[in-house]
Length: 266
Image (cartoon, rainbow, N blue to C red):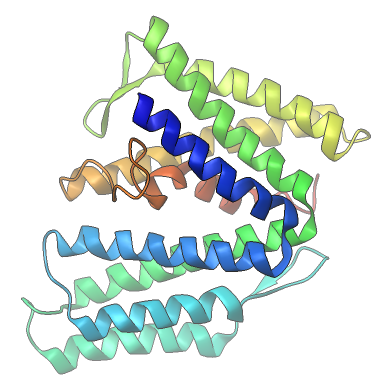
């Protein structure tokens, strides 16, 4: 527990100033986190099958293109250059034929990487995009993730009896999910109505926050399912006591993706 607390404090001391300053410094920090997340994503795959060095190198290049080739406007529209999309498919699918060796690189590996690159690239770009709109709205989304996770853990520890999905995450309980959702929605809705927009429609904010709170917990389970499939406890140990980048960003990634559907509503 001591290691976990110290690790969290160090991470916050580094990230909070960057978060507040925003701009290119924030974008560069997210770029680094995205690369580290990709490294973990590739390492999980390597635990079952070592990927060719060329494919790993291509992955870092394509993630960089995806992070900085996406465009967004203040009207909350988000787009990708079709050349980047086409390029991602081509650089992963063609080698599956050229290597011509399933044990080295297969079509299954190609689609795993295509999905992973789009998933990570779009998610981390949205993180940059929302911060460019304003720090308050991004804090609101982090509130949903942090308070939902925190109170789910506390509630599950105190009164948790009924397992949620034991085959994926043995420690998660239904009671924990309910407690985390209730407190996450309560605190995050208060934050939005107090800091982000005092004139917003309360009912709409409650509904959106409820949806995102549940979505974040499902995201946590999705990443747990990946780790379970590859028989690993954490994606990495970059944050002692907490795991890796993908362990810490599992719920917020899904909250960011889900929030894109509501940006023109609230």
